[in-house]
Amino acid sequence: MAIDTGDTAFIIVCTALVMLMTPGVGLFYGGMVRKKNVISMIAMSFIAFAIVSIQWVLLGYTLSFGTDISGFIGGLDHIGLNGVSLDGEGIPDMLFMVFQLVFAGVTLAILTSGVAERIKLSSFIVLGLLWTTLVYDPLAHWSWGGGWAHSLGALDFAGGTVVHISSGFGALALALVIGNRMDYGKYSMEAENITTTLLGGALLWFGWFAFNAGSALSANGTAVNALVTTNISAAAGAITWMLAAWAKGKPSSLGMISGAVAGLVAITPGCGFVSPMSAILIGGVAGLLCYNALLFRVRRGLDESLDAWAIHGMGGLWGAIATGIFASAAIGGVDGLVNGNVSQFLVQILDAFVAVAYAFGMTYLLAKAVDKVMGLRVTEEEEYVGLDISQHGESTTA
Amino acid sequence: MKRVVAIIRPEKLNDVKAALEEKGFFAMTVHEVKGRGAQRGICLQYRGKQIKVDMIPKVEIEMIIGDGDVQTVIDTIKLNARTGKFGDGKIFVSPVEMVVGIRTDDEIIS
Image (cartoon, each protein chain N blue to C red):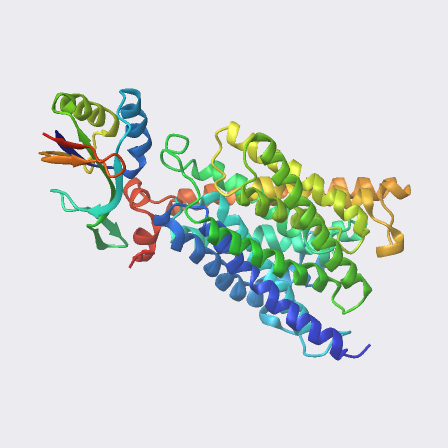
């Protein structure tokens, strides 16, 4: 099959739109921290994108999509983009490579939630490189690059396990290793600028169309189904989270946008396999589930600061399982539990829980190692002054 | 009457506000300010370089109270704003000549 210019044009545009999700995460998170850490939070997303961009072309792509080694990791045959050509089937191989690159970038940006307002920038860079190599790349290989989950037939259309379970449960592990922010629970640490967070959330919702529809790798009906289910699920998540928060007090805009992101996360693995009506359920449940996960985290006094675990981790876990429940052969060629295919449901559960255990365990070990060698956390004084000044020498007011 | 101006840590504002409220002092004006004290800010070591942060964000509480309440207000603020470290702040007390209520036309001359 030769290059299809329509598909190629579509994926080039999708790649650019997905890139916008990374600064989107930065703004989403930046609005939720205190004024003295806004720059640090937004900058970490940009830095994540920059370092993963280089890691991916040198090593990440081949570890994810190189020739399979024991179902676990890709070989080094594409190291430094060796053999990645401008030809391909439908779209150029090089375009597929860069479309995958923007996914890896945004995933590391999501992970910054667990260390917000207290990590040393230098340690974040080292940890980020190790994490993307030893956590993200194997997971991408398992799901998409011919690894064990792929061979078992596990469905992950656009990255429920690879992107969301990995970053969500990774953020939880990081938060446990680095510890709570100074005076967490003692003083209010309310969102500094909701407008910024809403803008970041809007960019995420917008970029997610390309994230999910583009994962069809072709401008076809599957891409359209992914686009439609993505929007429906986001809307359903926004509404259920908002209603749940309303029942307890006020319908906060922060809850509404968090619910939308929860819906987006949950539909990601199944967007090309489930119907639009299933998407209402998937997103609606995600809004309620992730909201309750957040309340649970707060009750436990655990400072996974910006709720990557509650939203991406738990939303991704639910999405992977929901794909096994609602998949329909009429849409994506595979049936799930509601259509009588029990084995697909079990495969989804296995895939999701292995991803949870691997992402959490491996991130925990990497964080411990970096902490031991160079220290993960800034000093108490630097944390008090804020990371904008202590790590970047800049502040939002000057 | 006296004007009490207290410069405190921003993270202590809620504690101080609640404690003053408990003692019956509601009226206050709060400003976000920046400044430095006798220790000249905070000195950070960053990769061998020294970074001086001398304008630290603080909160300024301004209250106009009766002469007899000065000690209570000062004690309440001190108790609730103190961490024991540099940068806990200062309290200034000065006389007030007159207070005028804009809606009520009340004039109180001290």
